[in-house]
Length: 368
Image 1 (spheres, rainbow, N blue to C red):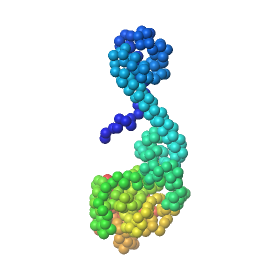
Image 2 (image 1 turned 30 degrees about the vertical axis):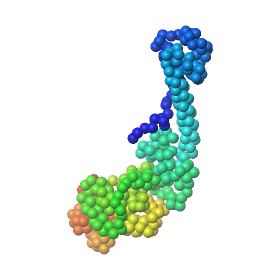
Image 3 (image 1 turned 45 degrees about the vertical axis):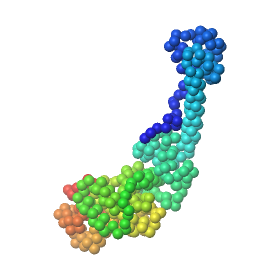
Image 4 (image 1 turned 180 degrees about the vertical axis):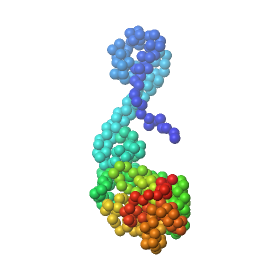
C-alpha cells in the first residue's frame, strides 16, 4: 500500500535554526563572527538557533549570501517547519478529542474481550473508528443506543450462569463484522437436503471437522464464522443475514463433536425455518435458561437440529427399547451407524433429553 507523504505527521518539527547551527559548526564559524558578517544581531541570531524566532525573507538572503546557499532553501525550511508544527498541533487536538470520546464509550464495549482479540490497540484515534465499524454505528450516541434495541433488551441473567450483556453483544457484533469479509456463492433454499447429508458425513468422520464444515457451507452459500466467546457469555451460536447471504457464528464453547453438530444444525434450523421469511432477524443461541433459550423459535430450532440428525421416530424407538443399554458402546455404535452419524451425537441427545451427562464410554467425543 502506497503512503501519502503529505498525510504523515512528524514526531518533531525541525526548526531551520537547528540546520543553521549545524552548518556553522561544520564550517567552524562562531555565532559572534556570523553575526558580525551578516549584520544579524547576536540576540536575534541566538533566538533563531534556539527555534524561538522565524527566518523571514531578509534573514534568508543574509544567511544564503554568507554561506553561499540558496535563500529559497531557508525559506522552504521555515515553511516546512511551520507546516509540521501545525500538523502536530492538529494531531494533538485530534488525540485530545478522541480521548474524550473514549471516556464516553469505553464502558459500553467489552474491553477485556476486544483486547484479547487485538481489536483494542490502546490508541483512541485508532480504536474508536474500529469500534464504530464493528458495531455499525457512526458515533458514540448510536453505539450506546445499541443496548436499548429490542433485539437485545430481552437479555436476562440465568440463575446458574451469569451473562454479561456487553460481552454477548460485543461477540455478536464481531461475528457480524467478520462475516462481511467472507465471499460465498449465492444461497438457494433448495440446498437443504444435500447440505444436511454432506454435513452428517463430516460429523461422522470427525476429521478436520470445523474447516470441512466451513467449506461445505460456503459451497451452498452460507457463511460460517468461528469466534471464541468472552467470559460470562453463554453463547453457542448465532444465525443472521449477512450482505444477502445467511450466516452462522459459532463460539465452540464446548469442543465436542456432538455439541458442534447440534449447534450447526440448530443455526441451520433458524435459517430454513425463520430467516427465509425475515431478512432482518438474528437468532442468538444462548443458555437454555435465558429468555432467549425459552422462545418458540429456539425450541423449533432445537427440534430441527435433533430430528435432522436423528429422525424422531427412530429416536423414540431407540429410547423405548435400548436406552437402558446406553452404557453399552456396541448398542450406541450400531444405532449411530444405522443413522449414519457419529456415536457421540447419540450420547449428546440422550444427555440433553434425560439430564444424565455422566456416562462412562471410551467413544471419543472431542471435536477433531
